[in-house]
Image (cartoon, rainbow, N blue to C red; front, top):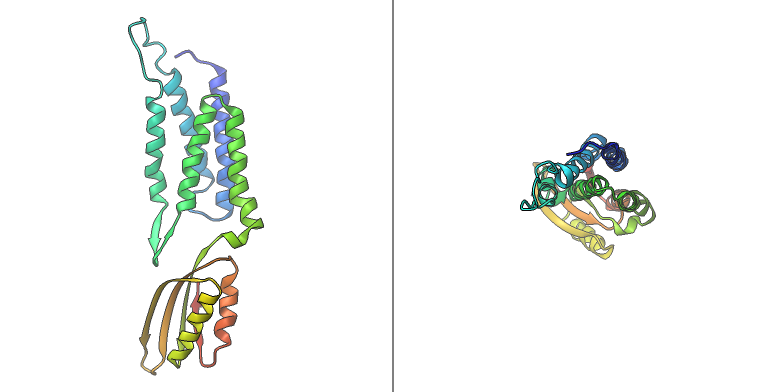
Length: 219
């Protein structure tokens, strides 16, 4: 392998672009932040360079043929192990898919930079940030969030009324459990997927409108 300062530039560009995505993820307090995305992009770029140029000195005759994509292909599948570590299943809902996908595309950006495809790497980074940040702010109605509400009600019909109201608002009930406490109150726990990010406030107002309902927790 012949050393070239162009390789250092590729690694630096990959680390920079990966770091930009990491800053956005860190700002939103996600599982994988700046350092993780920075290292994924940097490592992917190094692997890409090694895959394409790391064995130049081995090819001594025309009879030797190497598949220069073998290492790069392993990066594509190997990044899945890191992504899987950010995905958790909690309260009947999956969390961390966006972070895992972000790591996957960050690896792709690093590989593109490692191959010297700077425009593709930069353009992809812009699209990722656009999708993660700008569209998230401009189109909050297309984003769903999981909300867990725990409350106490005196009558069963109050719970039924609440469920009907939630379904009318387009909320998906993903989990429901109830029990009776020592005072005879009905303790209800709801897991729901709301179609807009601020529904937790609306849910609180909706619960407070019901007589005899005591809200314990909304998260």
